Image 1 (cartoon, one colour):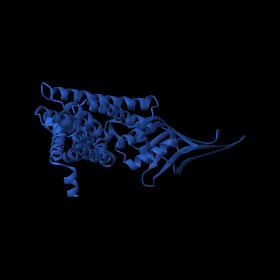
Image 2: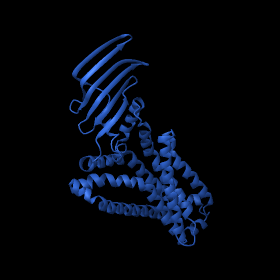
Image 3: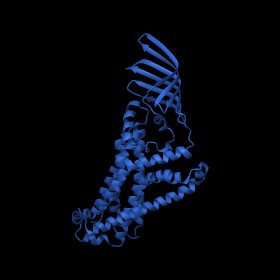
Image 4: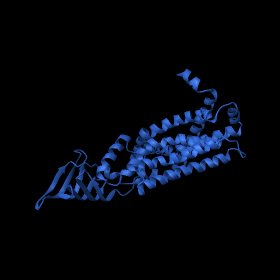
Length: 369
């Protein structure tokens, strides 16, 4: 293993990799410290009012908050790190001797992509496994100490299977109770059964729904039958979490769902049709595709900062920051088009990497050889 590494990775490669990862870690820590300082100053009064213990603030709030925002800022931090140390190398005339020693620019890129590959691996497994877990911590803190949103949902529609539809005029997430419940069952286009109830209550111990003050109408051609009763326990393919996901958008409820559960939710949503399918698909696809930005932005960063320019690293750094924010803007626009203009989610998550990947290849052709 070590022999292979020594044959494949030379001294100059180790030099660039150490600079890359060292600058990246320093920039990441610096950003996280700044985030904590500003966040504490902004939310200190909220912490005191909620009487949240220090352990909950540290391990639940910041334990979930910091990994989430570090994950969002990772492309920006990675991009800035590449531009900063590469422009510094170019300014100190370290790149010219490398390229003058019969080293091609593609060979010069090797250590960059090795280092960005390390970041990609951590980025990928963080997105797929670690970040959903830490987001659950921040959601738990919000529900326990600071969540002041309205717990009542209005006018909820859901499809349970190919022939069963339900409607709730309102649902209270606190007591897990729905009001003015309607369930309709169809055979093709024909209504076969309609159940109405004043309340439907979820029993967390029995894990079933109790339908209270209900009336059922059975329809068989021209024949109809009516039943009513005070209470009826039934197993419906829905959970309180199906309604909590419609609650406060700031709880990042989709991001707190594990990847395996997210896939199950997507399959259920294909049947139910509550309008959340695109958001769920975007979240799932982003977890797998978003880490590719480590390679794309590294390619752009090296291409624009490897040339020595007057004024030092200021100009490449400014261009890099502009391009990185353009990447974020394109990513946001692609998401909006997917949610509002029926752009397939799988295409939406690839748009930023494809657009800026092509930009990186163009800049690579213009880079000094």
